[in-house]
Length: 124
Image (tube, rainbow, N blue to C red):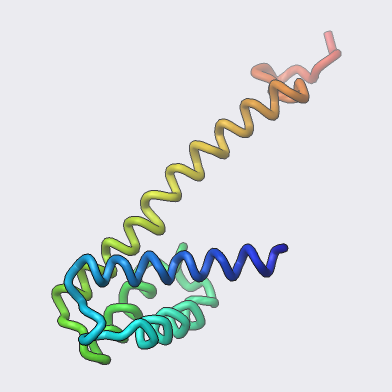
């Protein structure tokens, strides 16, 4: 199940990148879907070693350089890559943090483990 979830996650990210490119005016004639997939896969490989948190900076550089090299117009590619990163990093991180905080509060209520004082439960 973990492998399936990982594949779905990567394919979802690829689709978001492809849609961002198409909505920013980078047509299939300029950069084909297979080229986008190849550059996306290479970028995922390059950023497998975590040099910066979330690949910040490296992902943008690799995607932009790759897409411009294969024929994408630079301003549109840069815009599409920035939209992609906003949607896949700067939107989901705050949502994930809020979900984690909510989970901690509700899990604490369920198990009785959430304590506001430094005195352990049952100790007077």
